[in-house]
Image (cartoon, rainbow, N blue to C red; front, side, top):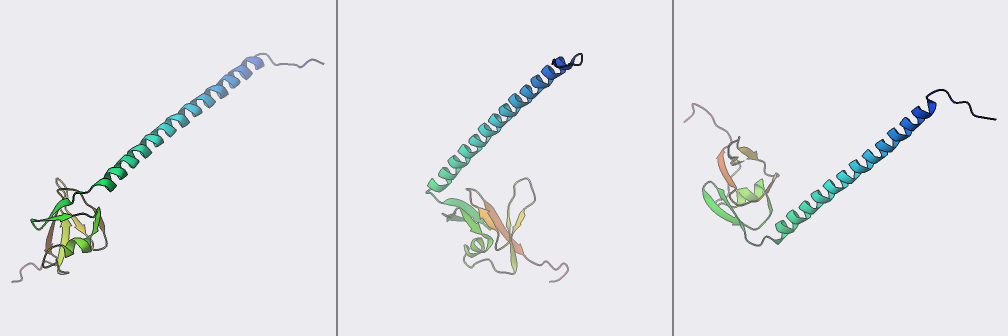
Length: 132
């Protein structure tokens, strides 16, 4: 018994097979590209972590124009407040200077990643206009 084919059915089946093959190839290429990008990202992360962990010299930061040298990679707002002598009290807020942007208020529990040249300042927590 012979199989009956509609006119053009074989051509459509070949087109479908070619389409499926193209989709498979594009998927493999996409997955390879994603894998390479992920490997590159992970390599950069490992390099940054290694550099971060190997850093021996302290970070130089300023709080209210006084320079401090800190070895920690992260300090909380509370730890930063404790650096000056006397420490910055609860009646003052601590801000990180953001060049070209809005200065950021640092909460006591907030962790700040240290880097050379960071600058902080304190300001009265409550400003009462018109009072002397």
